[in-house]
Image (cartoon, rainbow, N blue to C red; front, side, top):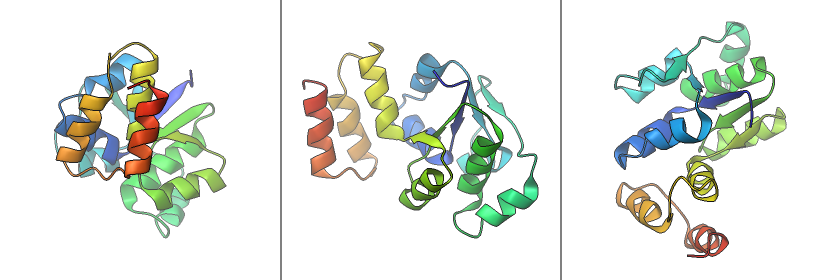
Length: 151
């Protein structure tokens, strides 16, 4: 398990929309995010999420030339933390994280980990709820996740 798990805005919003934000806490125990992500979330951040500012604001500003401010701050924080896992969904931000050598997952990875960890019995109901709140999942990815989890 990584020492630092850093959440971008999308995972917070999506899991909140389907009333399953607690999955993050149950899987990872401690979650970090940035003030910029907290601002984008636009709701009170649960007390179990640690808000931490990026130390190198110049680096964060540089990353903002490629992705939005929340993603830039989350990526910059992940760069500053050894042994981190970034939870991020945006494709452009994921590509940047990959180029920077940052380990990452997304909302679907979190749900898959919840199932493989035995925290939830089925992923299909959650995947259906994700579609109801307009989280884009291709049919191929949906089928792959269900098959991988014997559903």
